[in-house]
Length: 147
Image 1 (cartoon, one colour):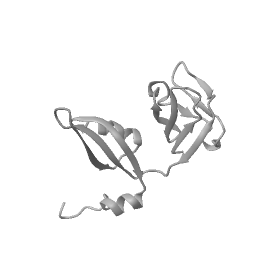
Image 2 (cartoon, helix red, strand yellow):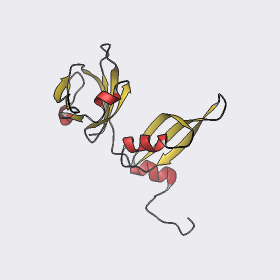
Image 3 (cartoon, helix red, strand yellow):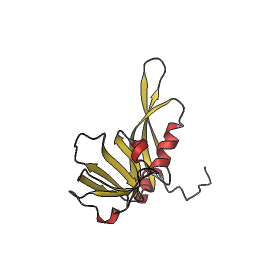
Image 4 (cartoon, helix red, strand yellow):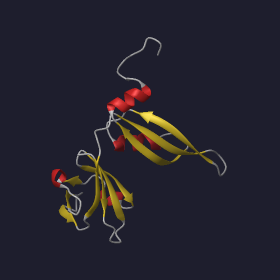
């Protein structure tokens, strides 16, 4: 399952998880180092108001997150991603650049974005379906003799 899970805010340091293939790949606004990589055990049974059961990293084990799900946004499998990256422009200035990449996962896109020269932060990552990606950028599987 690919989804964005928003938890009821009970004062905890995290309110949103991005999940790809039943694994937590992003945690906002804090505690990615704690929850990143956790496997969601009840991914097929998640509902608004329900609880998330995970198998965490070593030392966390299997547990249920006590904060109920406030919002559950199911995402389609991504064929590619549109990415906005904030760059240091020299001095105190910054600029936003737009990229589009084929990648196997959201986490791979974030890693690649951080390798961009002068990258300050990733502003936005938008997953694209195969149809939307090909409509916007052409089919990457077709080799043109002009490329």
